[in-house]
Length: 240
Image (cartoon, rainbow, N blue to C red; front, side, top):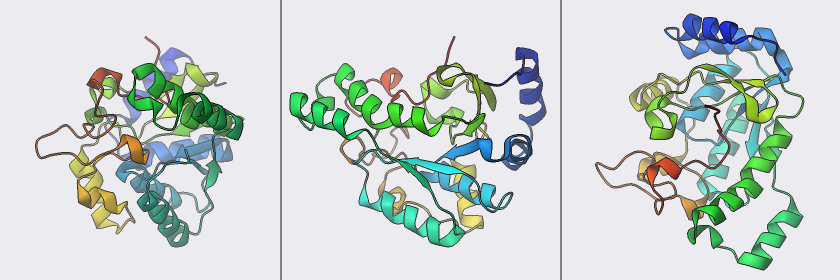
């Protein structure tokens, strides 16, 4: 649990809002060392952050939530990043007994039937493993951006994660546009998921992700059968 007061959080946000994401990452590395980790799902934002982070510290802690239903292309970019940056990813899987119980009682595709079923699947495959990944940490880093979704429009660069014991949650790319993310990837030759070239701006589990059509919102391909305000899996719960 962090000991920062709300005024401290406000001060940090004022300090880093106009600075590049590397400034917040450098501060966090100096403050927390190996008690901080990056959550990486190998989307465009996350691989950009991997590249930034390894240039600040050669062996950062980076964890991956392997839901068991990821695209093969996601595993491919994970391997390319592993070889490129010479790092080991901390991989967390869902608990086998919980997955077996879900499939036995509701089948393999229950998430299509209701928001409640989908959130149950997300909880088993993502939220519970995230809780284990964050144990012992004082801060974690995400690739969240304000432009990604209506549910993310007001995220700060620094916030207290009350859902996970009050540790700090850092969103260095909060103010970046999609164009800025891709400018960085191209400028630094960062390995990225080839699904992005096939119309997938946002990539999650294979059954819950599709390519989008021209003019659609960038999150339209995630849980496309639900309304926009419901499109969160429970990893990024905010109070207030």
